[in-house]
Length: 212
Length: 212
DNA sequence: ACCGTCCTTCTACAGGTGTAGAAGGCGATA
DNA sequence: TATCGCCTTCTACACCTGTAGAAGGACGGT
Image 1 (cartoon, each protein chain N blue to C red):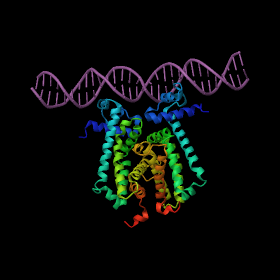
Image 2: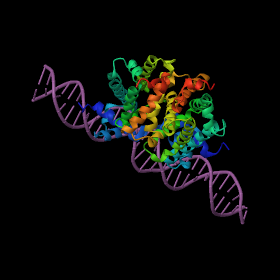
Image 3: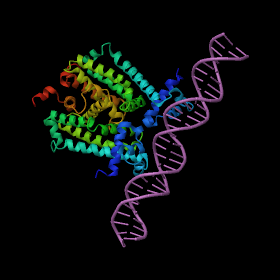
Image 4: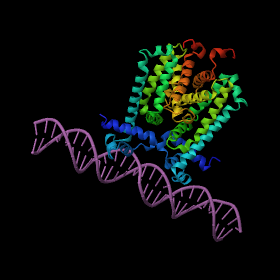
């Protein structure tokens, strides 16, 4: 149920993390945010480290669920999809990014906060499973598309896509780009991602134009 | 002199920020890091907000100095450079990124921490001057290179380049990519950035091959 | 030599925070 | 019904942090 204390608390913790930052993430702040009596979070997560680890696990789960839901239904073999219709793939990724910066904004902010935190606490690197999943997918896609060095190109691709997300969520792009949650934002992202896909696959607009 | 208290303290604060994160940034921690008696930081920056703002200003200054030193000497008109030799431009940017993730690692980590902090404290958005500078430069470069929509493509370009930096510094790329500070890393980055430049400029490897 | 000014260092203290454990309540089992 | 174990809530307390102000000292002007 939604009264599962662990889920309620970790979700509240994610909200706190997004709004107050790592510094504001305290047991009492999570209690307040969840509307539960003081001491609750402290009882469920005796130490602060335990609380953060729970948040990290939750984030990883939610992200993986999003990825699984988005990428797979397009076709059983996602590698084939890339080859046949780059623009559709780009639009799919753009939709996911747009969701992560509008609906799931808190979650994404919390993820970046944890990612930064993982710099000093290596045991938090569990989050990277999410990165590894999309990394593997990108490599497969580009390999199927005939890229010369799929591993390298795939890594570059996910780094760039994550850069688009970060820039719009936190960086300067947050003001200059179209606002998240709008069709304009998705369209803009689609253009960027399609360009990236073609570039890293070693294909180019002209060569691809016949496919439309 | 190097005994300028303000500079010593803000530099120590940047180190603390990089090593302990925003949560570890306290007056006393900065004192300890700088090897100065307790209370020093508190005397120079009466409030915590003042301390963070000083750090942000310092980061902005240092970054702008790096940018000015790197990009300009290549030629008075940087836009022309892009057109004539994409690979050289890419190598220059790659060198800067490599420096930011090896020599200037602490500074870059601190910058991301502040960027994240600026989410809840809009007055810190001074850092974005740095982003705006490279953004303008990218737009000009791509415009000169004949891109159809230079403003849009320029924004996408800086976002992607920043993604490469972030990924290697903090994300999954920190383990899979060549280690920062090595020629291999610069070479890898150069490949990625050259691909990006060509893609967003609307030029492509084949079309460009005659230029070599 | 005397004084005022500034820089530096120390100390105080009111909150806030992490963590442990006690107290209370509630359903299941015998 | 009495007992036990578990989940929940409350309380305690040592420690850390932000911030203010006092004490100390160097130093140039008169």
